[in-house]
Image (tube, rainbow, N blue to C red):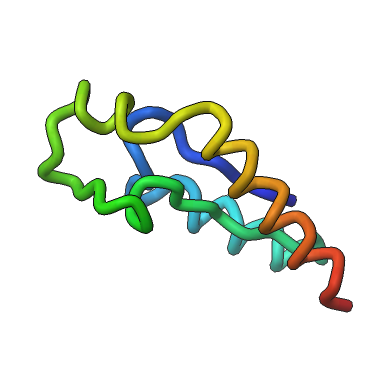
Length: 73
């Protein structure tokens, strides 16, 4: 399962914990942070965050991670 964060980014107690819970139940999961690789940090203004990443970026990252998951038993 590919877990994507919302416009606020990855938050403690959410995406990574969901991935861990799924893993503990036998489901391969990964949380994708599409902000950090593009230089967006927690201190980045909210509007700058949402304008820094396009829907195409998110879809491309998601399919890339999905392909990676498919290659792993």
